[in-house]
Image (cartoon, rainbow, N blue to C red):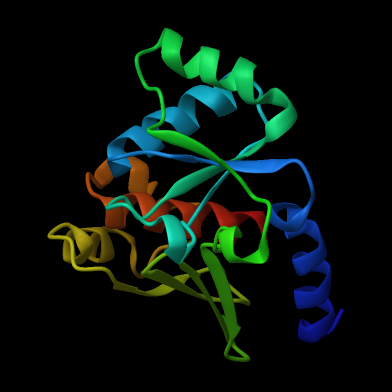
Length: 180
């Protein structure tokens, strides 16, 4: 499959945010989004962490996209663990569409995946991590020192060794790269 074909098929897979019946959970802090994502995925909900649309940005630069038909059950799940969102916003117009966190760039021999502001670049043939960049968090150099030069299968998970929003975003890029 060509790279353009790959992008088209990937775009179709992730096009849920413009589907009717979607909404976004808005939280005050990134740590709440991370906790809510873990809880909801563990409970089996089909959700996605995304960037908030500019119209509702409120400090935290992540939101969770949910199926609105399940809003009450999802809210109940989060309230039971003390992590309710600040608000739920129906995605009823293109202006409220959440922003996909992932961007891919094929450099021929290398593939880079960007999640939020973190970039992970891997040599396609060997799966070796050749670069980690982006973000402004203090653990980015540490994450890079522990992962660059290792294969995706050998490298530690950023979630295990990182402790910031940048570490979380790198984990998303790492998981996306492993899926490929």
